[in-house]
Image (cartoon, rainbow, N blue to C red; front, side, top):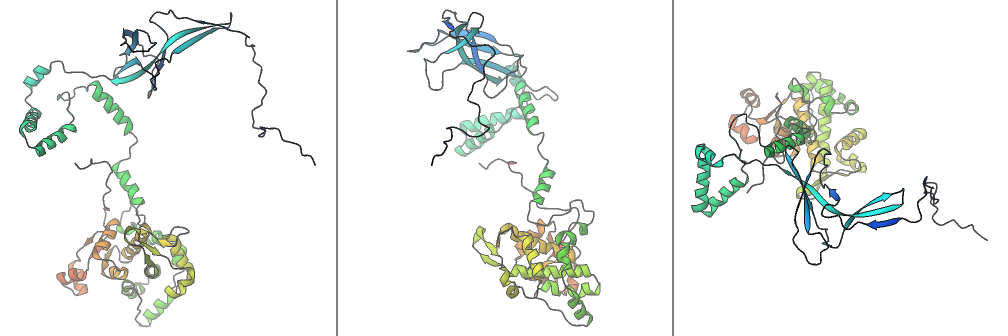
Amino acid sequence: MSEKKRKRGSRGKLERPRKKVALSTPSPDTVNVTLLQDVNEWTPLLASTPGFVLRPEIAFRPYTKPRPPKPRSTATSKEILLHSSNHPKLDYVGQEVETENGDTFLSHYVGVYDPSNETLQLVPARKVVIRSTLKTTAPASPVIEEENDTSPSKEVSARNTLGLTFGTKKSQKAIRSLTENDIVSPTSKPGAALDPLASAVMDSMAASIADMPSRETIQAEAISNKPIPKPNLEAETPAEVYTLDDLVELQTLRSMQVKEWIDKENDGEEIITRSRFVSARIARIVKAEEVKELKALKYLLLLIEWYWALKKTGQGSSTTLKVPKKEQWETVLPGWDTAAIAAVERRFTERGDSALNKWHTNLLLTHILALALVIDDCNVDVHDIREDLHLDQKEISTLYKELGAPLSAPSETHLKKLQLSKSDAQKSGHRVASLKLPLQFPKVRVVGARGPRR
């Protein structure tokens, strides 16, 4: 059985054809090549401009200087130098450079081909590298300026000179540190024009910071990336900062069953849940006939019990909270609808993950605390919710600060309601988180605003 062999190198239709396209003018069979050696010191130049683009209107003036003799070198006796000062702020200098590997026998040539008589002339060329430097302007009469200078900066300079000469090592180090970071202005006259160096620096700074975001933009972006519910920064009242529509999904809120609570409260029965915060507020909300708020309170109870069902694993910064498996829901979360539990798990975990890291844990806790704020009309005594979540005073204070609701001491009216004195309330941890306008969030530290400590 014979198989037809595939031609070597066949790679499909996209392969270039092996057949060469005939040129319009046939190339000659032979070309006469001549080398022009006697070209004096002026030869063509091969110039490169690494790092910038040279404008075509820049004109150069050529100069020559004796080349230092080197053994076994074929270079000419004179070196070519190019210089241009046409630019208002920059000087351009072109110099011959050796090759990177130090090969002194490497030469460059420029070829000129004449198709009429089929000749090619090779002319020796030199390679130069053109670089740019900022122009600097020295003061016209530094001696007179120094004599007439009575500014405080001169006194500081004199003290620094004495300190460097007679001071201790510690003081000398401090003076050198100040001198290294000092920027001395060439003139103290208001409205005076900057020198070319300062002007070039200012131009480059203006171009680099043109698209730089403002501090307010950075703050808003940082808040949106924090593990907190997204606040409404354009809110006109505290109640508009966090709303039930933003904190609870509509479908999940509708699935909360509160008829049993309403019936028991209307029959005069006491309703006791596993949460101190929830149990203390059911009666008030049922009497106010706020069904939506009562459903939000039932959802808050679900979040608290789901938080209790998470198992802590790991230590330190690697601590995570393991989510219970679906077959364990009836045991750790009895009486709850499985669809509501699944909605909570989807909202506070990454897809496919079975544990909450530090970021997602804080997201869950801040949602619980924000719901407590909404239910208590933006002023909540944190004692009950802190006990439910097993948090210390510092942790809950930090979380409420992130929400824009710092803690403060309870008012006299609240103390009378609690039947506690001010000292007793402080000892028992009764603090009030208040959401007020304008919102104040912890300031975001701008990286690079301060230099490293010395």
